[in-house]
Structure formats: C-alpha cells, structure tokens
Figure 1 (cartoon, rainbow, N blue to C red):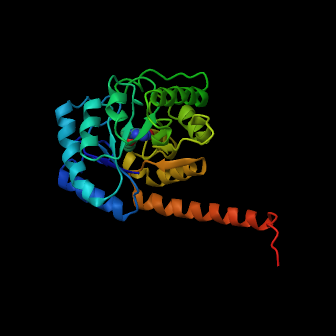
Figure 2: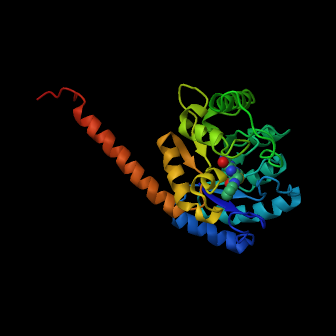
Figure 3: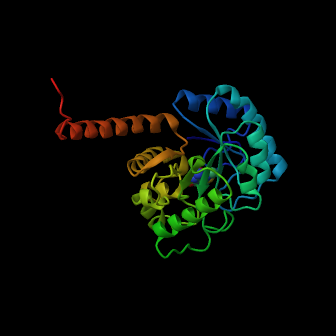
Length: 278
Ligand code: 8Y4
C-alpha cells in the first residue's frame, strides 16, 4: 500500500504533493513501482496537527479519487469522517482506512451498505494529544488485540462481512516509541483477533519515529530502516504494508518471498509423498 498524502503540511514529504497534478504523478510512480493499493489521505494525522475542515478534506480527496479510478488500482481512503467516507465510496473508493477504527458516530453506517474493505486501526488517545501523556498498557499486545477483537465484533454485529475487515495495531498512535511499538512489531501476529481464519494485518511503520529512534535519522533518511521494518512485519504475518518508498519495499519483499518459498520447497522435499500407483 503506497501512501499518497494530499496535505500541504505532511511532514515527511514537505507537502510536495499538495497539488493534485503532483499527487497524480506520485500515484503513477507508485503504480509503476508495484503498489497494489493506493492510500489517499487528505488530513495530516501528525501529532498536534490541526484538524482539517470537512470541505477542505473533500476537495483534496474526491477529485483525486475520481481521476485515479481510471488507473484501475484498488484505492483506499484514509479518513475517520463519516461524511468523507460516504463521498469517497460514491466516487469509487475500494477501502476505507480509519485511524479511529470506525469509532466515530456514523462511521459504521457510512460503510455498512457498500462492499468496501475496512482497515480497523488501534489508537490510544487522540492524534492531537496521544504523544503528550505517556501511553500505558497492561500488556500492549493483548490490550491492542482485545480492542481489535471488540471492534471487529461490533462491525460484524452491524452486518459487515468479516471478509471485508483488516486490522492494524496502529504503530505510533499512542505507543511508547521504543517499548510498545517494537513489542507490537515483534508479536505482530498476536495483535490480530484470534479467529479460525485470520484477519489480514496492515502495518504502517514507514518513516515513523519508531524507525528514527533506532537509526537516529530524520524522516526523509529513514528509508532503509523502514524497509527492514516492512520485511519484519511481512515475516510476522502482515498482509499489507503501508509505505512511502514503494519501489525499494517491493524489491525487499520480493527477496523475502523468494526465501520463504525456497524454505517451503525444501520442507516439502522431505515430507512423505502420496503413494503413486504404477
Ligand atoms: C513519518 C511519516 C512519520 C509518517 C510519521 C508518519 C497509519 C495509517 C497513518 C498506520 C494505517 C504516519 C493514516 C501517520 N499511519 N493508517 N495512517 N496504519 N492503517 N505518520 O500505521 O504515517 S498516518
């Protein structure tokens, strides 16, 4: 999943894609680079960032969405506002990625009658303040899983098919930069609700402080660290990684997939083969 920010204040890319033309070119680039989904966001979720008025978010997201429909690639819209969800779905969005996990009044109703995918993310506190007070958990992995379990149950009780739902532990959203985020990454598979068939896990780590805190570099120089984190996430069960640097991440994941498949092939070689009649 390639990140397409349409915000003039997006701090990791300096707002260089604020203009629609730039955003379209950026989307084209990500498609050529191998993105399977594009995640369009019109409101910066940077801690302390001012909320964007509804009209402005719609103006940023909807025309871009309409243009990108032609590219025939799955489109996700990063929003927690029910009104933006409804407009986005009318304009052809395939997925709604909600950092509030569909907890805002009206969010569930906004997506229920479509067949869009949902990404249900965990967040402790609010974007405005979540990094101010230091976040506390009993056990971060089971606390996050419990939240996601409750929220997917609520969504399914509202009539949303389980096949539409993916889950995300919300790296950086009300987590202690090193302790909580890396516990969640190390145990990523266990952050998802326990179920007979697992919910797809989304992981968004790209260029975040949890990478910066380890590599000691500002956001634009966190590419290699972010790729390593994406591979760790894939290894631990992530089905979708939300990233800025699509080309580099795709290359890294191709190597990981090749190693995984080779490991499976050599395992099969020593497994008993079904008896063949002559
Ligand atoms: C540098 C670059 C530093 C970006 C911080 C950031 C997630 C998400 C965001 C996520 C899902 C961000 C919309 C925050 N993060 N959606 N959205 N999962 N599903 N910060 O982790 O990228 S925005």
